[in-house]
Length: 211
Image 1 (cartoon, rainbow, N blue to C red):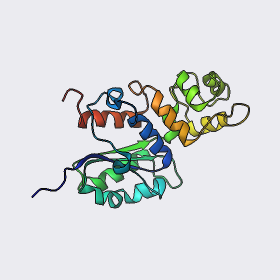
Image 2 (cartoon, rainbow, N blue to C red):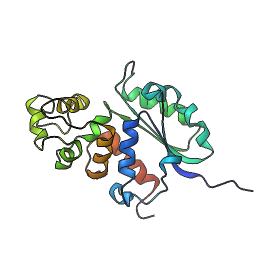
Image 3 (tube, one colour):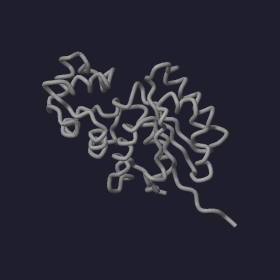
Image 4 (cartoon, rainbow, N blue to C red):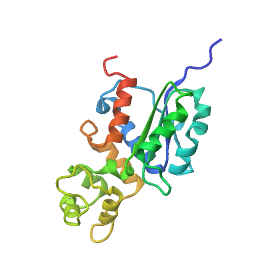
């Protein structure tokens, strides 16, 4: 007698900001079209879990946290920042968690955002200004503040760039709700962030568009 069918993917996230970004991306109507993959089952109540121990806890205990889901899910995604107190760096984080999960999961992805989640919000796109409720010339403002060089695809210190716009006179909205609004709007097909592209390309591999 067989048990219930396993769900498609479980997501282990390091903080609530990541949760809001993911819910924004995967909460779009027919979100799979934006990602360029086939549809897959996604329910935030069953498939998304935020570690209370944040990045260091995900780094140290991802295998233990995900152990119960080995019986309920086919695949796992672990997502955390590279920049936190005591971090060994993005490459070492990726290698360590990969080594821990290899024996337990046939299909999984370790998404290490370098340096931090705020890297995903920055595009030279008017949708960014609308979602963050900041001036439409935010790109020039950050360039003038030496926080986003004009020849760079992303600010080198993305969290610092957001904090600059949150201060007067700009007063951008840097809340978790703003992250979700932004994820619901911006293009994901042309994102230049390596960590996001790893997530997108992994989902495309697991769920091929023409399958």
